Image 1 (cartoon, rainbow, N blue to C red):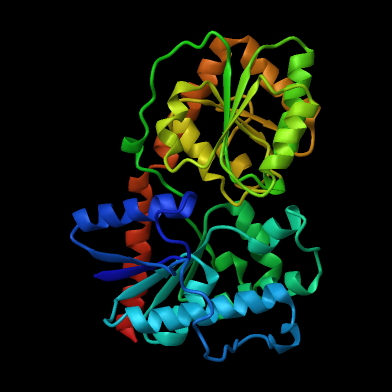
Image 2: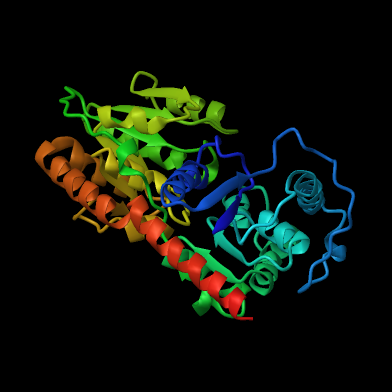
Length: 379
């Protein structure tokens, strides 16, 4: 069977999808399956000219809104690039972005299409203060979900919580299959070490949705309580300068290191002790599984896919979002008790290795591909 994995971002970009799909391709190649990756290069901008239409809603009332216009132009660009680059047939197309899915179905209507929804663009925009719930942009972006439901042969997502999020926007949420992200455990190499001062680490894009302002407030509280630590922040984004200013304002200048973007943070994480990220929302939260495979104790918020990965007090600690005091309390527990921290990390590693293995993902995807292909051949 020959399969096309249709991405939006190029595979070298950071993030759960981009870091996972090339490893999926490698595993399928070892099984003798054909699999290729396809994405839209950053240099392709404003090339597409074809008109865009949707089956389930009329998007023309939204035209004139800058975000909607950019989304439609990106759709046109993806059409233009796909027509240029894809010249051969595939048995199945697996899309990992709404635009990729819709374009592929438009251009190759007879090819079975499966799609994984990994995250919510509109929810990220709301949390980052870019749009408001119920706005023109929000209504347009949530209309896309029913369009996807009408076009794809199999719709999948990465967590039960994200399927619940999608439920109001589609007709049959019960038909969505859940396949959590999986990780090649060979990439992660825990390293025995003893740090004199507890080393905290977080890895994310520096945007409001990740709750790093809450993390800095909790770190200031830890310092007030007299607990030494160092916080390492890996990632970049539009609020980096704002966070650096906040760190100085809170008296944390000597306790925090901002590294900026790093392509393979999993090579760096094993030297630290605690992974912490107080996200305001996460469809899955791949970085928690990656940190667990590096044998770090996990501290996160009780939201979305994070709460499905962490059982509070067993393989990590969960706290309510927007609560610096509760986060400081959780961090205090792992700062003052290395044995407790070690036991959480060991349990986290054990669960991640069993539940989020790449082999499990391969097995589940094989089943989906075979079922979709068999249904197509039976017609």
